[in-house]
Image (cartoon, rainbow, N blue to C red; front, side, top):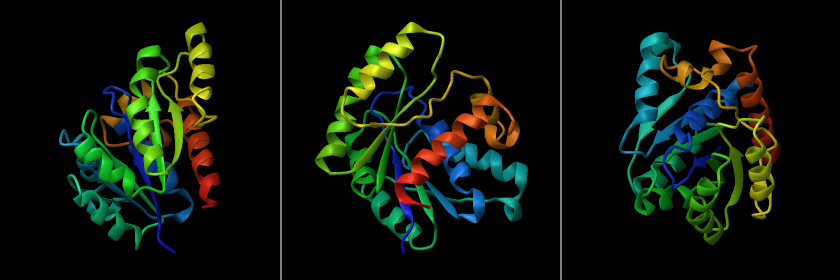
Length: 213
């Protein structure tokens, strides 16, 4: 059985796609599962994170397979990686149908991170339309959430009203996320007992339930 291909997609910049991609990759790799990551974003942020990780752990200690691809090459790369891995996570760039569309077409699941603001919600529509056109299962993930904010509660309801699946797990606006990324790590490793790590574990559970893996 080929592995599950998960594409992190959102046309609006600043949604936290790369952070979500890296954390999902590490979270999905628990329990002996094999994971590969594909960076389709020309900015190469996921690749920079992987390089930091490789420097920290060494080649023998690295726990992910990493590839870069662009445009239609993402489909071939992801398909080949899925033959030998349980999960393949693709990080896509914002504002680029050319780069994002092939990654959505090959996906088993499209994960759409968004901040809980009206502007972010409006900007999510093109990505959702693309995923719907390709008949892809989609899950929305609220990111950089301030749980004490009334706006967060309002936007959580508004997101659910879109009619798409919304992850029960919400990722808080926590320094732990960017801090861990800077060293090629994740909150699961840097602060395993923290609230951020708990959020990621809950998100991973949401995604694994969809595929029973």
